[in-house]
Image (cartoon, rainbow, N blue to C red; front, side, top):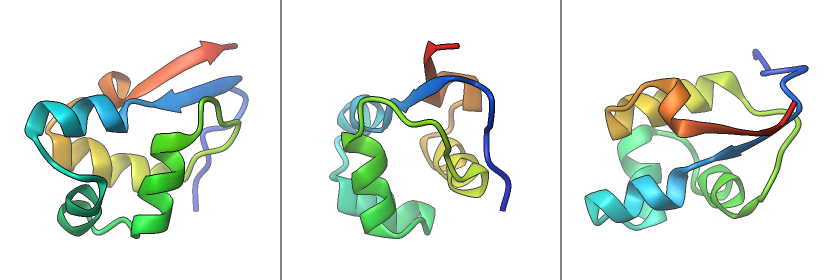
Length: 76
């Protein structure tokens, strides 16, 4: 499992992207194959120091965005 380390705090723009598509977080989970509890915690947390890179990759592919468009770096 890869972690995005030493990037400071990151936030995943899951809620915004889901709203654009009209999807619930449960639908995001079903479509991406990322378990719901993970999707929910990533969507809720204002800043994280480690993120599962595999999950980010799946979510970006599901939303059809680049990883850079999914990940917001809050502080380096």
